[in-house]
Structures are given as structure tokens and as C-alpha cells.
Length: 245
Image (cartoon, rainbow, N blue to C red; front, side, top):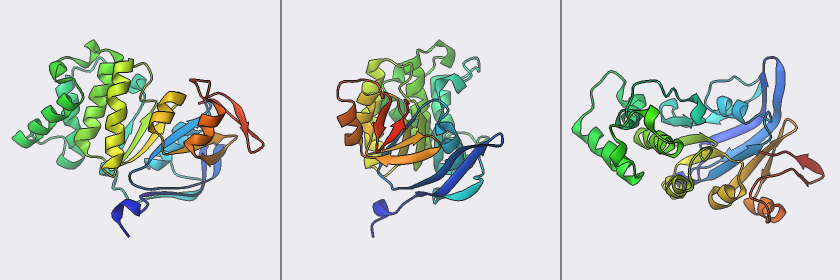
């Protein structure tokens, strides 16, 4: 059996709670390398809670998350609102911090690190911003820099929380092929999405959270329901009402 066919992430009858309140229950899934999974659901449906559990930051009330990826190779790109723009850091410095999980935060960078960082910034079209402070960047430029940090990390499992929110269409067109190439190279990606066009261009599978449960769908099932809509809107599937993302 090839390495690409082996599951890196399994969810077994997962029950999750926040503040004593059950958020998700009976969530199952088997996510393999090279797949992009779109995670969709209404606000409060449990998307962030599930991400926390996968990252090992939230202990399940029952069931389990089985992840064979070392924590140093798991990366979580939160929404840009979580980024402190007042911190005095340049684009290049942010990208280089991606080496910290494997290299250490207190060690200096070698020539190979800097070459890799420059190659990544060129790939993302942000070489000219290398010395620009984060606080002076547009939303799209910041997102490219954050993805650069992830590429520097060489993560095997990447979780992205609405990576296209508040970014320009040019950045979307740059990032989607990069995400697809990451998957083609064997990375596992889980992406919180709310836009049908982005889902159509990216997702191999869809995990919809609704009413405290998870339901696996093929992207084509959503495409059929939403062929005339750019947003993922409420609809009924299998007799159950699904929420917005």
C-alpha cells in the first residue's frame, strides 16, 4: 500500500464540548494525504471546535482523533483577525518563522533557510514586500505572507480557516493553485469555506456540520444544489436542513 493511500487523520465517534455544552457528536471521518476537505457549516456549527480538536488543543468528551502527523508538522492558519498587526515584523521575518517548529526559535537561520524563504516569497508574488512591516500590508498581501510561513514549515497537515476572507481576487487566483499543488505533493488540507466557487475549485470532499452532527458529501452534491448561487446557502439534503457556512 502506498504512503499516499494511508490515512493520516481519523475521527472516531467524536464528541466535543465547549464550556460544558456539547457542540458536536458522533463525528466520523477518514482523511488521507493528497486530499482537500472543505469544512462548511453555519456560525456556531462547530468548525473551530473541530479544528481545535484536530490540532490537539481540545480534548474530546468521548471518541478520539487519531492523527499520525507529528505536532511540529501540523499547521493552523487562523482568520487574519487573529494576527497582531502591531507586532514589529516584516514579511520575510514572518515567513522565516515557519522553520521554528523543526529548527527552533532561538537558532539563527542558515543560507539554505534564506534561499528557501526567498523562493517561497517569489512563488507567492511577494518578493517586493520582503521588508515591509505586516501592518502596512493589504489583506491579500498578509494572507500570502501567512501561507509563506506555512510553506516554510513544510507541514503535512494544514488547516485553513476561511483563507479567502477579506482578500482580493488576484490573491485567490494565486493561492488556489498553490493549495492544489500542496495536495498533489501529498499534504492533507482541511479548509473552512463559505463560497461555492472556491469550494468548486478546491474541494475533493466536503464535511458539513449541522445540528451537532457531521455529514460527508461529494462537492458535486453541493454544486447540483447551488448551481445558481455564489454562496453556500441553506438547503435540505437527506431530509435534514443544512446551514450556511
